[in-house]
Length: 135
Image (cartoon, rainbow, N blue to C red):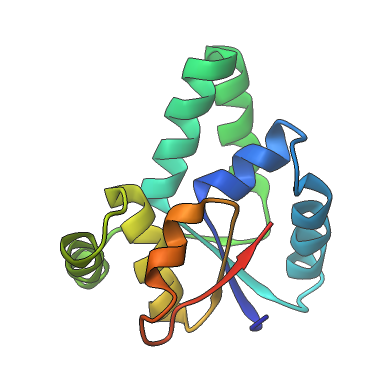
């Protein structure tokens, strides 16, 4: 795994719902907090986390998660022109959601490792600079 790690919605939702991989995510967040790794989350994936938690667990839990994420020790990266362009290229080439394309684009931009449990990302394993760790 690289020093840079990118969290997608799947990994952080698993963390909040204490699902498979939650302990691994907690340990990784500790490494980021200690400066052993650098962590990133695309703002588009933040939106996906919010709406998915809102739908599945209610407004109160979604708001709480949003607050907690803002306190987490990683950078929340805006969807600027270059990141959006790269995400659109990936979306055009692969059968993935647009939010997942943003996570993949951020992963290649940071030369990091995407942390996920979403099997959709298997389609991208041959993409240059794309690395993934499945929880």
